[in-house]
Structure formats: C-alpha cells, structure tokens
Length: 167
Image: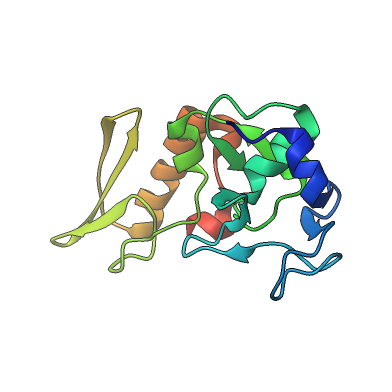
C-alpha cells in the first residue's frame, strides 16, 4: 500500500510557510504530539519515518499540498535541502536538480566545473549526460565567467546563485 496524503495528515501537521512538520500523535520515545518531526540525513535533507518507512520531508510536503506524489525529482529553489517550504519546492528534471545542488567545488580552484590544467584553468559542464567542454583560460576568473554563462544557458532558473556556485 502506498502512503497517502490522508495517512500523512493523520500523523503529521505541516506548515507550508515554514516547511516544518510536527507530530499530531504520540509515537513513543521522543516523538510526542506537537514535537518537531524528522531528522537531517547525511545529504542535509530532512527525513521522517512513517509506518516503518523513511521519507524525505520535501516529498511529504508535496504529497500533502497537492494530494499526489511528485512525478519526478523535486528541487529546492534556494539550494537548501532542509528548507521544505512549499514555495521553495519545484518539479525538476534530474539534470536541473543536479545543477542547483550545493556546490562541490574542485579543491584546487574552489569553483564548480573548473579544474587546474597545468598553468591554465579548464572549464566544462555536464548536462543530460553530455560533457560541454568550454575551453582553457589563463585566469580562474575568466573560466568561472564562462562556466556561469553556460550554466545559465543550459539550466536557466535552476542556476544557483553566485555564492553557492563559487563564481
């Protein structure tokens, strides 16, 4: 049996303005009625156990608000995986969702999609399984600017802000 919005609403209260879930019922241990539900996973997403199964809170929020499971990946528009406000959640393709994740920068350059290549900086982006080679540049700033432009071209509104991207 698939988890339904009705079952989630029996157990949990969701505030769409804050993204916070609270238990409606005592579940034993620390899970008492009115206490905050869920805990962060290693990826930073909030996970909540319902009927012995662990669910990501952003998917439960979608289920509660829209009455059905999302058709595919959900993206946190601001890139914060623990921010489950319904206004921060949007449907995305796997590529769009990946594009807007918190940056795992190259440890040598500190900039996503830029690596040190001898005395130059190589820029490339992967999208939908294809690698887009963007060239070699004399400076890190040049390479970062090219990456930012291509990222915006490929991913549009799913391009992370400058601070999260390291551009």
